[in-house]
Length: 164
Image 1 (cartoon, rainbow, N blue to C red):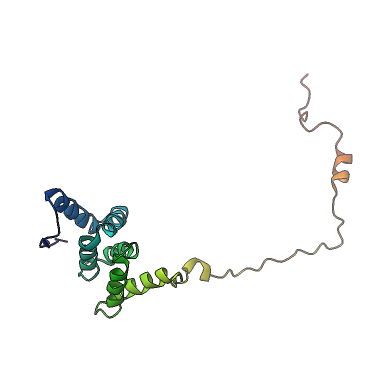
Image 2 (cartoon, rainbow, N blue to C red):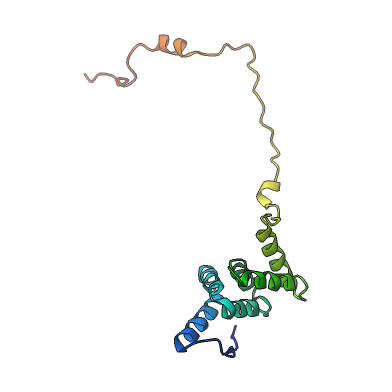
């Protein structure tokens, strides 16, 4: 997916910060989950510029994994940006895309400390046809270790017959 160039807001101080923001933005749209998550975390420390990039990623027409990473970055915003990030996530609840709405809903639930509802796994739903039950003894006495020792005459290791 081709990412359109971002307009400079005037807050970027120098060429190095512009390159860093572009690099983090490209990593946010990466196919590698670890890179996306790390870029979102780094953008969460970038104040207004990071908020702007994360907001654009959340409301863009990108894959849901990119939106999840953007929500992760917004959840990790600290200080004065925390309130703005919460407002962005609440705006996402009213957004037209169902992916964006579900990502924002789960992000807000995580911020409240409530775990998101996970779908039931298919492996647990399968029930076994067989039932485990006890086998009846049928009048047979249980062999004890003492009974088995009394039958043994030679040590267990010397079971070979002697060579002639």
